[in-house]
Image (cartoon, rainbow, N blue to C red; front, side, top):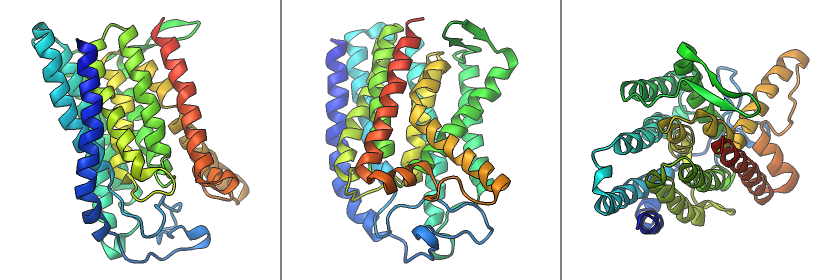
Amino acid sequence: MIRFALIVASVLGFALTTAVGNLLVPLLRALVPPEKETGPGGQPQSKDKEEPQPQPPRGLPTMGGLCFIIGTLAAVGVGWVVVCLVQPELLGGGLTGRLMLGLSAGFLLGAAGLADDLVRLRPRQVLGLRTGPRLALEGAAAAVTVAALWAGEYMPTGLTVPLAGYVELGAAAAPLWAAMLVALAESARLAGPTDGAVAGAAFVAMLGLMGAETILGFFPLAVLPAALAGALMAFLLWNFYPARLMPGAVGCLFLAGAVGGIPLSIGRADIALALGLPFWAEGLAAVLQGLWRRMRGRPLFKAGSLDAWLRRKGGPVAAFYVFCALALAGTLAALRTAQF
């Protein structure tokens, strides 16, 4: 019967995201900011000489992540009610707390992304929040998530490493998990402008999470990734190339929070590290780009970022498939890790 609850959550996630999207898309189109000052490559130029900020194609509405966030929240609520009706003993156990923590990680980082998106609507701040305030908001969201994990006694104090077994981290665990969440958020934000890349990669990751939670004995909690997977399927109807709606920072950061926070809520940070593979690739490319620019005085990727380089070499569809392939590799690694 729990399988039925997962199916309900997935179908509801799809249906509700579709319904919310049909209502929100016209409103989001009305919020498209005016023409931006662009430099070489069409990227808005920062007046404080920071790296060019990731931007969606001109004229496309952003903050589309609100569609699947709302759809997921409603679907998880209904799905969890069905689960608890089937197995009432779950309501008083620790699974409800773990479910709420997994959701909270996404919502807290999503709130930081929403602040960035709202600032972009102002004509003079189309680049969004500056790096310092943005990282401060993401850091605060990550710190609250880790504090909630510690208060609920769910926080893992180590991680499983292939061939080495369980590695205890002790007091270093909390800051490391917070840093991981912020790094995931920044990496997902950078990949946001590519049609379907973040949503597609997160969809594959949610399928992997369903499998990992089943292996680890948290099958009822799979209602959350099931609902989010259904919601992302609906969102890809607008976000796949040629995109008519972009997730915005709110959507990218919410998905990063889900990919990182749900595994943390079940005590398996190693699964988050594996599932985040496409985001780690984007983040590593950004770090290498910055280091190369400092050492050589020129960029490593002429396109500016990994996703932009993939779009230039093979087009948006090719970039989408590369991100999904990386997500699949991360999912296989996560499922293998869950067996240890």
